[in-house]
Length: 83
Image (cartoon, rainbow, N blue to C red; front, top):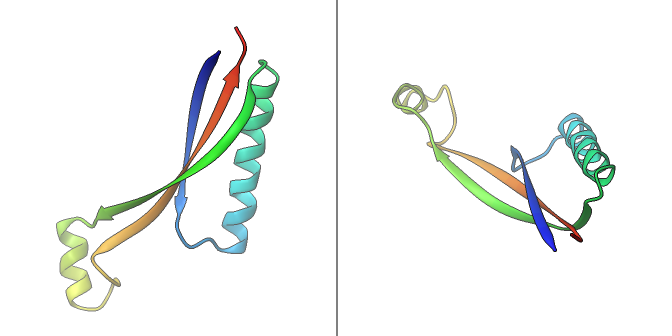
């Protein structure tokens, strides 16, 4: 067996328009790899926290931006194929 992973990153809190775009991206990846003989084994979510840059921290102190971190989620799609 051979395995392959594809990572798709997105904001942790999804709004309706982002959800549609994300679903479309999943469909494209899955259909593309399925046509090459890959089968979807599963999806593994990973939480990501990114520190904001120095200018964003300064603006957040003034209340222009909220918080000091950006939270994302990466979904790792795991595929396999018999060799």
